[in-house]
Image 1 (cartoon, rainbow, N blue to C red):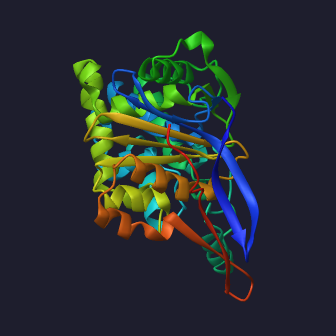
Image 2 (cartoon, rainbow, N blue to C red):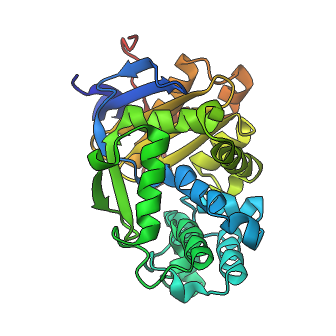
Length: 336
């Protein structure tokens, strides 16, 4: 199936940009319940995989050994802005496992939030691993390595036993054959996992309703989703979409963004998972189509829609801070 028009960007009376993509909704038994475009479109899971990857922190025993808090688990699932609360949470994880930021192999960056990056630069801060939006995930990886006595000098390599475990965890949760996963390298240096978006949606559905998992897996899924629900501020940061969606729905819906415009949502009310991919990779254009899809699926209440309305239609502003257009979901014929 070809990609469908999902998002439009207007400037004045002109549709200046159009963003095409794919949507898949799957229940926890693997049944496809809704789609637009190609539900089996293959792309990389990117950072949307983090909640599933974080399950390994719990199933490995590292969670119990180091007594991680829900806040620390939430930062392991995050693509955070590197705000002080985020940096402190990552440092707390590293302190518990007897390491420091020099062990993080995620790379030095500025904040993912450009406004906050400028603010930090004006205060004299330069690029740092703690500003890296994946530093929480990497801290979780290091915790597993310390617990299992793995070498942590090369934990980002696909051949490392940690990454082999992570790949198997993702394959199992998404019910996708490990040998069919297409591996690449993420921006933070670790392996990424290519598969159909319908499989990503299934992974989120099983996180939302882990009835078909083992007792250990089910317990870890519940711990992870509860950590995200109770600490949504860790998932992105001030003004961030992931933080807002998880906070407004009080964790009933848990959503996570991935680079190159992937977004996944799990619904704990009905045991379904959603995955969206924009083909052009513009992740900043995702929120309107996520909100519209959640609305069409009746996953959001009227109150929640009102509280998230600023993400449903995003103002386009010029350098004078004047609104000159909007980013919004395409409102054409989209029933399928």
